[in-house]
Amino acid sequence: MEGMFQLSGLVDSSNPEVTLNEVIHLAVSMKPGLSENLFVQSFRDIQKLYAGTYPGYQACNTYYHDFRHTMMVLLAMARLMHGATLQGVRFSELEINLGLISALMHDTGYIQSVDDLRGTGAKYTLIHTQRSIQFIENYFAGNPYFDGHLKNFRDIVSCTEFNTMIDDQEFESENIAMLGKMMGTADLLGQMADRLYLEKLLLLYDEFTEGGVPGFDSEIDLFRKTVSFYKKTKSRFENEYGNVSRFMIDHFRDRWNIDENVYKGYIEKNINYLKFVLKSSQKNITDILRRNAVSLQ
Image 1 (cartoon, rainbow, N blue to C red):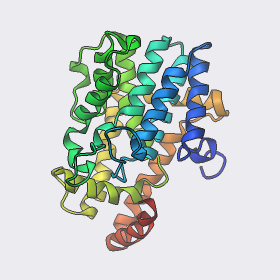
Image 2 (image 1 turned 90 degrees about the vertical axis):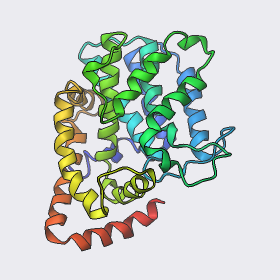
Image 3 (image 1 turned 45 degrees about the horizontal axis):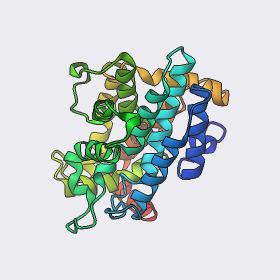
């Protein structure tokens, strides 16, 4: 797994320009002749938003849900859409923009306005999805390109919520439903396959604490429950999300000549290592990960 098939060795998602170029490449391959202008402008604005140079907003101050996380999810979303296209799914240019921009803006709800001076954006953890949807609707208000289609953003982004019952949602079309399932899948694949996933769980615990997320008594408790969370996640991939993760194999085969879902391998590597260290020394894992996590902030 290390080396040739390393995700960051294929596309360095910690580099926004590299990520943008790869996403555009995949989008154009899905729809030759596609205009990239709308997506690129949205990308630049969200880049400014996270950096604190977008009017009316502070810089991102959540270290788990940061711009790097957004880049990983965006790239995973583009890869799923590309793989689906290889399997015969036909997305319109509008649908491609809906899917990619949903991924780009799915966590904007963590960003605080300039006059919001209490705490960090983590305090919005439990309502960040609705805030993200509101940001998208405000951002595209009056934009004729998405006239009559803003509900699709809401339906797609809502699929990242763990308590959303996707089968109960009324999507505009089968393609929009598929984009919603891809959005939820990409959000999980992007973060859980990250080589720094275990270190960043410490930062996620801090966000959960400030956001009042119930069910986690300590960092170690979060580590333990991450193992069971992955079991639930695998079930959700296969059932509620319609197994759209299968499209990753088509993407990696076509784009990189790799005949496997590289994300799956890295997630299992992370979870297996977490199981190992939990069995061997719980105190040690907390100390080690805390030291490594310092450089992430």
